[in-house]
Structures are given as C-alpha cells and as structure tokens.
Length: 224
Image (cartoon, rainbow, N blue to C red):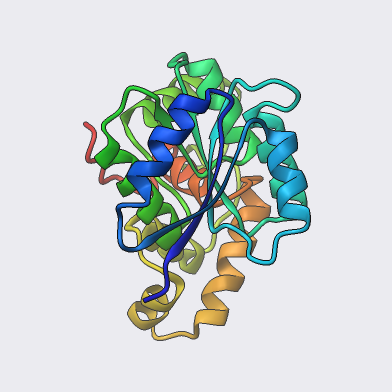
C-alpha cells in the first residue's frame, strides 16, 4: 500500500508532536518530518530523498509563515499540496490562504477525524473544501460581482467540454475517473485542467472548485 507522505510546519511543539503522534496511528499515512516554521521545512525539503505529498502548515509562524511557505512550495514544488492550520476564522485570512495556493483550510480546534479526511481528500482530488472556505469565497465574490459583465455572469469563455470537466472535478473525480466518464484520455483531461487553471487564474484545483461554485457552474453544494 502506498502511504500518503506528510510533513508538518508548526511552531508550537506540543501541538505539532500531538498531531504527529495521532497521524502515525493511521495505516495509510506516513509522517516524514516536523518543522518549527516554513523556512525550516523548506530547508529540509531541499535535501530530502522523499518529498511529502501533503504539508500541514500553521498560518502564523516565525521566520516564514504558512502563506509565504505556500507561495514558495507552489513555485518550487507544485506537486506538494498544502493544508493550512490556523486559529483565524476571518474571511480575509481564508481568502489569503486560497489565493496563495492552499489546497485546504482547517481550524486548529477541528476534530482530528476532519484532519485525516482533509489529507486523504487533498491527496486524491487536490482540494478539500469545508463550509468556512465556501463562506469566505462567497463573501469575496459578492464584492466583485458588480464589476463582472459577461455571458451567464462568468468572467471568461469556457467551452462546453471545459465546463463538463470542471463539473466532474467538483465531484471529486480523479483525471482517470473523468477520462472514463467522458471517453477521453487522462492526458486530455489533464490538458483541460491546465487550460482551466490558465483561463480562471486559479493556482490549483481548490481554486477551480470555488470558481465553479461562485459562478454556478457547479450547483451541488453540500453545505447549504
């Protein structure tokens, strides 16, 4: 069984050690390292033999915070997905995390079961969205709606196929599963995904899903 490789960046050692101990009890998870801040984690990654699949990062850390860490990982290690852990629940902080390229967001007082669910979901689909993230994105989009003037209120042109792929991404299907559903190759799906990222200006799959929800391309919303 291929385990999901995880790294932690958290300056509160007791909290970091507690999460690490709990994660090690999950059979499908492997904790590679724990760092006290973003700079320390980047230094470890630069010489690591195995890269993490998912990083759990605190937003507020000394030397390099979670947002700066996310930007650096997006630039140099785009395959690594970042889930942000924070005590901040304000929309503006959540939006900063999403815009930086975070694949998910969790409050530090969430249940451990949600942490594990988020890790597994991000590993499979590239994103994890909860009610707080959707609320923040809707709040941000509401302030921009008056500036948008386009067909169906979507600020870009999406082909029918691109919208089909986007809807299936929102349903948490992998490239292979989307390819089987549409009778195309996984490589073609990946091409559509990359075009969607370029057209929408989103940094990752989480951004695509939130874009689809905001512009009613994907109507199913489990949080309403």
